[in-house]
Length: 230
Length: 231
Image (tube, rainbow over all chains, first blue to last red; front, side, top):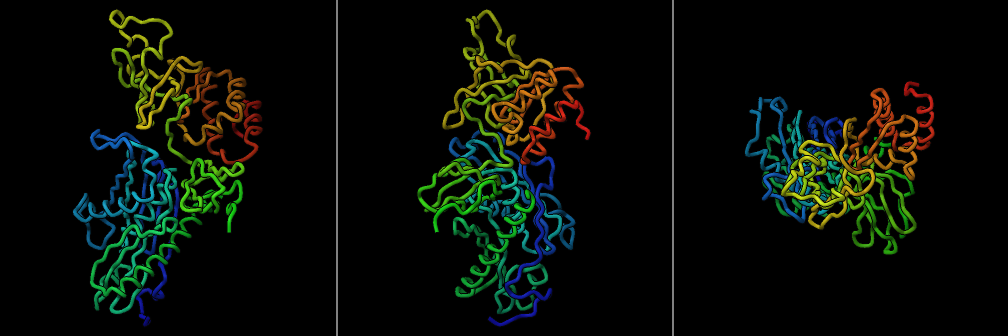
């Protein structure tokens, strides 16, 4: 694999700096902040609580609701506040990733609400959101099979790299962005999206690199929790 | 490699491998996948022989049979009450489980026994697989809670507040002359002299803050004897 000069001088398989904080929202049952480079996600978990309207209740399983919100000052040009087409798509992909690890059968009929705010965005917000949400769920004591993490892999020009930032996303020779969420305990990829064009061999390479990044993040998440309760 | 992979009393996180091998049995806060046993919550690993268990640091309350919970009457029916205990599920209290004698529902309005908004302590008698919760008020320690103050704490800290064989709560009751009912759902009712109530609230807050530390009972005993929380 040929090397490439990245805007922030990272190696192709290096993540940005990661900072993790637990219990950042006092009124939430569980909360966490996840910062990767200049992207910050704050997640708060509320519930399990009653689900209304009642026809949405499932007597066998609980439910997760995710609300993703990009704050209006988080991006370089003001973002109109409120839900959008993009945010509802992200609600869905984040929820689907979390659905497969949270043990929903432990709280039938109830709902767990997860609110994610992005105060600062520099690409990779959905991945940061998944990391923050999974930490917040663990902090809330919601039983889950694994702590999950996500990171974007991608292709800049002809080179496969890990954890793309905004400057690289707008790469002049074309950038491909592939967010990957992974659970180590289950050994499963929980989120895989693709924006751009890539050959099938390169895709395999990128996903492998993404999984490696996810494993690194999971280690950091575990370390942060253990440090917090030391 | 088989055997335990985590030491006792160590903090574990979800997805951590606790043990490998089919001789281990997963219990609270754990699950089995293949021949490995994984953790599902953040908590303290406390195995009992081959039974692997985790005592969670924070956990939402899920109803289980035999628990006393504290809630508010949310609705009054002709022969039953619905209690909202803040646990997501409504507790159903039939008249037969609340009254010792015969009540003629045609002549008396059962709202005179418990009305909407009344605070009650209720025993969970049955929980069905689809989480229908039935309550009972025939046991001692249950019934209407008149006066006093209800505080809310993290349900995961309740066992620590009660203590081994109710040692902690018994000690607090004796030293402060307060009447205390602890609900497993994290609600605690305290009644007594106004300044004593505030003192008990301070003590309970201290217990929840230092729940994971050892030697807490002695520390609380010292504070109770001094009658003042400020050190």
